[in-house]
Length: 115
Image (cartoon, rainbow, N blue to C red; front, side, top):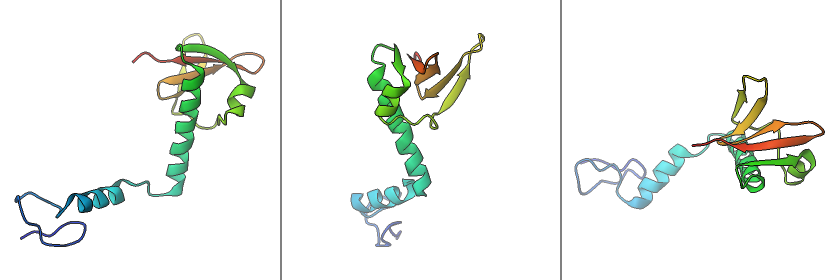
């Protein structure tokens, strides 16, 4: 007889079962997959917020916006997922497939990577 990994009750059923119920399976997986620290959770929330803002302002796949507009929506320039430097010397900051490049006079070019 095997015992449930979550509640330690005896398991009835298939030989390869690890949990006694869906509730125990969900509780166990939630514990295993939760962010270990508030730091990770806060960073992920900031990345998601920045991504949503870029998606909202860049519906067509290419757009121009101002620093003021980005900051008014709560965009945090310290959080991005990657940097791409072009051969021409331009630097793009990406949040997954949404990116931006600094232009003159506090404006930004918003772009979307093709999948």
